[in-house]
Length: 344
Ligand SMILES: [Zn+2]
Image (cartoon, rainbow, N blue to C red; front, side, top):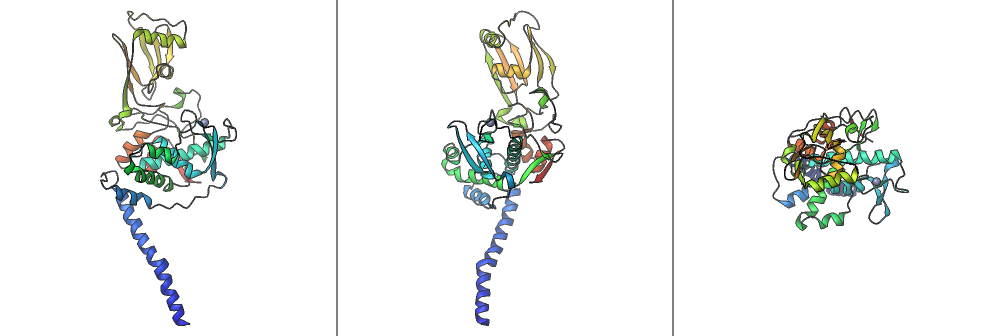
């Protein structure tokens, strides 16, 4: 009997304890490697695959929020997905995968918070579904197959692992203010300063959404853009919005900025016989942001800074901060003022 007990004991050690020791070693070395991510580019793709495949995939218990019904707007079908699995598709669609892992983790927490906020709001504007995959309406989502199609073949697995890792490393975490999930707006590039929602959509009630400055955003492609129109095109676009629009380009101050927002975007601008908001001009001319200069020459030229509405987290700002050593929670607290990050 003693012999049998000894064999069983050895078997247990071989089966469970020894592999567990090795697992611990792997996890620790992964943590060290992860700390260096921002500083060095991994040339070895296999190394990346290994690093990000070491993640605990046990589903988190979100109680009432374990699954979400997503409306796929192109096919008009509804799919019910486990919450974090849905978030893989959101992070994959919303943020470039080559961004720093801490920026991707921040994006995962932001997307999870936005999703929970949507479910709680229960607007039912999508019928049975709780959220849709249109970025202009809710938040973007892409399935794994479609995402793979757009990545180089040899990077697909590592890229996907990195996203799964970002979501699972932050599982259960959401952003709250006064104990409630926040309306976690985000955008591509703030141009150096984010915007208060009152200057974009009007209204108030989001004390955590204020203008904050972020350094390093000028290093991204999304930071600056241009748009050019002939004078005829310019007038025609404004007349589509206001049929009695009129402008005399020979007149001094025919275009004049009247007020800027705290975030440096145009609040009010006089163009010809109209005073318009910067956001309105952005929409009429399809500009990337409401932070722009207008030059009148042979043509009308817009020089635009930043990309998106400017409210909440800037994605390139998140990446820039991550590369300066910020962790995901610091990044979130930088962009959303006075918030907490809690486990649901
Ligand atoms: Zn929607």
